[in-house]
Amino acid sequence: MTMATPVTEADRAAVVLMLMDDAEAARILAQMEPDELELIGERMIALGEVGADGIAAAIEGFVRHAQTASLPAHDRPAQFRTRMAAAVGEVKAESIMQRIAPDARPRSIELVRWLAPQVLLELIEGEHPQAIAVLLLLQEAEPAARLLAMMPQAMQPDLVERIARMGKVSHHAMAMLDEILSARISSRFGEAALTMGGPREAADLINLAAGNMGKVVIPAITQRDAELARAIEAEMFTFEMLYTLDPMQMGRLLRDVESEVLVDALKGIEDEQRAPFFAAMSSRAADGVRDEIEMRGRIKLADVREAQRRIVMQARELAELGEISLGAGDGEFV
Image 1 (cartoon, rainbow, N blue to C red):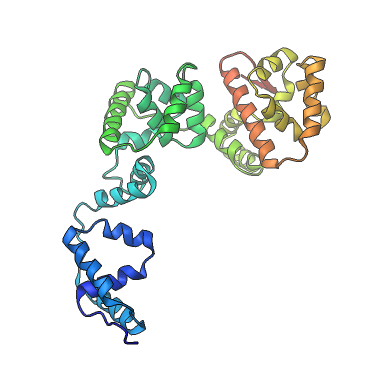
Image 2 (tube, rainbow, N blue to C red):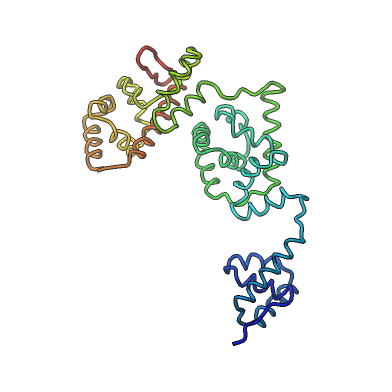
């Protein structure tokens, strides 16, 4: 059987397209004009079977063309953003562009990703829920969850639903959000430098880090600045601090803790450490939790730590509201 040999540019293009998988070829064909599609289709059918030499000739011609061609730099960020948006969606594409194209990115949107949830709460007060939902998606999961928890309870279901239904977000909408945030930041802070970081943020990083980072970091900082080390340590709320809560305060905390979360958290500690939790419950409720712990079987250590982290977050919120206080050793952290 005689193998077809690509001769024209259209022949070579047809062969290269046939080497691609269906999805890749379809994406390229979708960008062609009708006359180009007709020509390529004709050549694909007319070529018949193409042998190894024909494939090599097509690729060689493609390479020769690439060696003489050039890729213009004009509007490259916009070109990349369009393709990235098609691949991963508008919100993620915008976030990526903020990282890799600083001259083209909305500066305020990038800045708010570093602001504490308490500061963000003031900036978005009275803003449309859709804008708030987009802002939550631009945050990392941990600060976004904290910010959502600070929002009025009546708004939370609407925000979560908007996030779940979120589709494409236009570049125009992102630009409008950036303008709103710029105005709010200017109004809130004026010309003064923004306050970022602090002992609380440093403690958050230590608490979220794997391993026993605090045992290494705090002593090292103490050697350089003992006062700063104490300030960071005071913000490091840990699950073990909950053992010092009296029954009334523990009861207040447990009212906000889901049963499954509590069971997972207690599964990872010893019986005597569970005593402060059971002391805040009725005998019947405590027996029920004990039974659930026994029936739960083995669970991953990561699940235990996540459950304990969630309870600590709720305890911290209550402590900030003054509803409970957390004591540890030689001091009390409120």
